[in-house]
Length: 125
Image 1 (cartoon, rainbow, N blue to C red):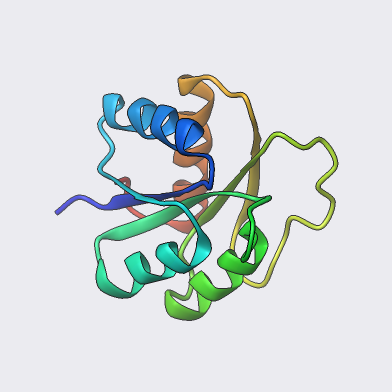
Image 2: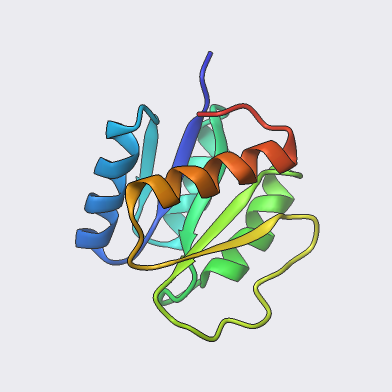
C-alpha cells in the first residue's frame, strides 16, 4: 500500500500545476482548496502520509492547518510552500516545518518531500 500526498492551495492554477508535477513523479495526490477541505480529507483518508500546504490562504492559513493536522494525525509531516520571502515563525509543535519557496521546479519539490518523509520516518506516497 502506498501513501498519498495531500496538496492544499487556494489558487486553483497553482494547485493544478503542482498536482501535475507530483503525479508525473509518481505520487498519489489528494487536492484541497482550503484548510477545511484538507481536514475533511485527513479525517476520511487514512492513506495520506504527508501534507503539502500553501502558507498564506484565506480562512485557515497553512500554520493553523498544520496544527489541526497534527491533532488529527500526530506526527504527520507537513511541508509548507510560499511565494512570500519573510516567513519567520514557520515552525510548530511536533510537525516538521519545512518550507519550499514558490515558484519551484519539480526536482526541488520532490527532494523536499523526500527529506520531509525521511526525517519523519514516514513512507513515501
